[in-house]
Every structure is written in structure tokens, then in C-alpha cells.
View 1: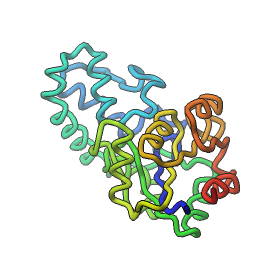
View 2: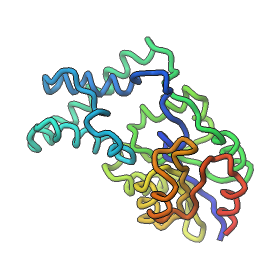
View 3: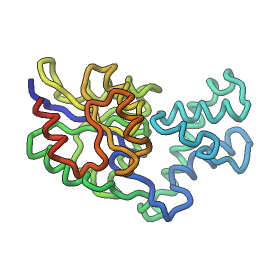
Length: 238
């Protein structure tokens, strides 16, 4: 049974934020919009969540940050869609004022994507980012050309639901295998929930978790860099 479909997480899997930057356009959009909608200034959502946010979807991140700011759940439910509108509005208004150089590609990513394309693998995204953020990040590093479908933060608050949405938009059919590429235990669990394989890159290769954590989560394959293409292709030949 051949693998015909591959989905990819984005941050920590394909790209990472340029270490020379203190904040990204996405971070500015979220932090400023929280201040506007809830009148709470000087918020940095990354500081509130820390490593916990890795593997979370954008909508889940917003809910968790607002909860930590002691905002009542009823108020969060009432205003979260408005908050997202403000975030995307700020993003629209400012994306052309700033060079799209917030992100860099992880080692081995281009070589891996080329190898999968050569095998006629259907490539898609499965990321917790809102769709507009995802494509903007990819276009900035010229990776958008590889992907033909995706599941995004608008689709579901859970990563499992996002992978499911991506698979529905792909050419994936019963009788063939699929594999999700990520860098967190959440990616691995979500792949398993969808009945597909998982491959994960460790912190050594630009991810966010150690090899032992990823293996303990049950990944079908853990690599220290996507440069280990032969191991990945061997997974596809199982």
C-alpha cells in the first residue's frame, strides 16, 4: 500500500522565525489587536504561553491567552471572532509596509519536498496558522509553489481536525497511505487520530522537542534533520 499524500505542519517543521528578529508581523498583529479589543496594553502572547503554544492552533492560542488574562469565557466566546477580524485587518494593512523576511527555511526542506514531488506525492499543509498567515509565510521563503491543498486554523481548534480537513481537500483515497510531517507530540497524536503515519524533526534540526519526546509520542520516524531523506523515503516504502 503506497503513500500518496503528505501533509506538513509549518512553524518548526518547514520554517522557523528569523532569530535576528524580536517580533514578527503575525506577533504584532495579535498583540496589538488584543490591546485594541480588550483594552489591555503591552501584551506579548508568546511570553504568556511559552513552549506550551507549540502544536496549538491560532484560535486555541488566542483562547488560552485571553483566559490567562482573566477574561471571562463568555466574553471570550462573544468577542473572539471580532478579535480575529481585527488581527487579519492589521495584517492586511501592514504586510506591504514590511519586508517578508520574518522566516527562514529549515535545513533539508527543499531537498525533501523535491524528492517527494519526484515521487508524485500529493503535498499539502496542515497547520494551526490561519490560512492567510500560512501562505504569507510560505511565499516569503518561496515554498508556496510546492503545496496544492491545506487544512488551517480556521477549520478547527484541534490539530486532528485540521489534518482531517486537509485530507478531505487532497486526492487522498482509501487504499493508500498518508504521512504527516511535524515537530511536536501534538502533530504525532493528530496524525494517529486520523489513521495516518507521522514523521517528526527534532530540536536538533530546527524543531521544538527532543528526539526522546517525539519517540515517546509514537512517531513512525524521528529525524534530527530533514536532510536524512533516505530514511524518510524508506518510511514511504513500507
